[in-house]
Image 1 (cartoon, rainbow, N blue to C red):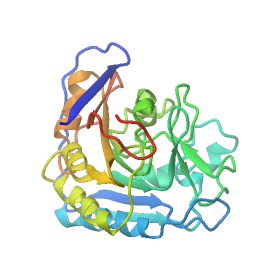
Image 2: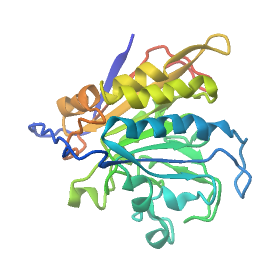
Image 3: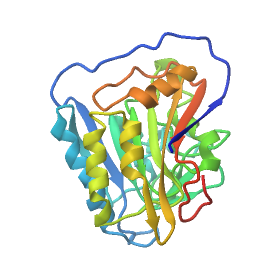
Image 4: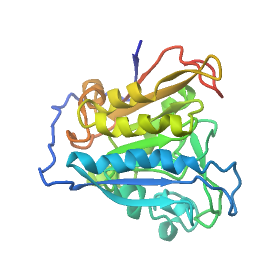
Length: 296
């Protein structure tokens, strides 16, 4: 059984939900992948070379439906925090060193893949190089006080997909909405992320998962992104009785706005940006029991 969750952050005035249909120009939207599969530079983690191949099944499927083109693959090489961090973070040198507006936030739909971990209140990821702002091998979502590297959507990004462990752990959901906006720029320009998909606990890598990523990209043009993610990424019976536990998460100005986005947005049916963040809401599988975490 698929179940919803929601939380009220602050009271918001009721507002009409506006639907913005993209101009019908072939493949006018941008898809990107950003990630690490080989950790053989300054930063250490176990290498999983097939990870890139798996994610490319999503990337290669995206242009086949008449809406998205491949706008760039930033994989391994010099991937450091600069490709993911926002210029408005407080890390020394970030104003000149953070370039998310050229990478993750320059896309309309992006998929990030790298080793992930629970950073206490939020997701953290392991980079390949420590040459970015702060000189760190890790990147994190912002916590309860906006400490962290990533704030997306204030430039262009609407849909962010995380092929990474612990990317939407149950205990971190109260703080995840903070990655959906830049508190410096979003109130001024009105731009915010629409949806984030990820996993509670560990996710899995291998040839067995190729169809999941390809089918997700195809299905999300025909049904909601939430339905495509939750249906394709849910796997049971791993290592005996463990599961892969997908989660789909959105924000909205009010409760109706939040769930309308999860229930109806597709890659080819894109709503206007949330005018504010009054609620966060999500879908999950109750009792889903992954490796690395307790049941949801």
